[in-house]
Image (tube, rainbow, N blue to C red):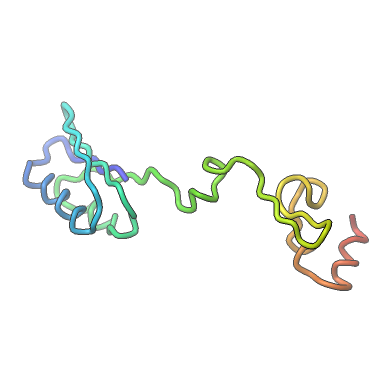
Amino acid sequence: MIIICEAKATEAQVKAVENKIKEAGLTVHRSDGVEHTILGVVGDRNRLDIGAVSMMPGVRDAVIVSTPYKLASREFHPEDSVVRVGEERLIGGLECGRGFWNPIGTALPGRSADFIKAFR
């Protein structure tokens, strides 16, 4: 997360924001620019109330830069996930269901699966 302080934020206001972040057990990287002070927050963002921080005096904006579930995202893992079920069934990628994933076909046993095969 990045916290952008207002151009006229006082040192006391910036320190108060830094202390709030540190109280949550997170690490702060401060960057003092010509017009703004930027606070980079490193750690589990769920430990910090983003709404409360963005309402603190001297804070202009709070921006989340990482995405939830990033370990499962295409950015982190670009290859298709393929899981074998039985001997022939594959889930994920283009191997399943003629290029699209069919959750009904993979979840229904017995006659329901036969019904779905009839429409392929």
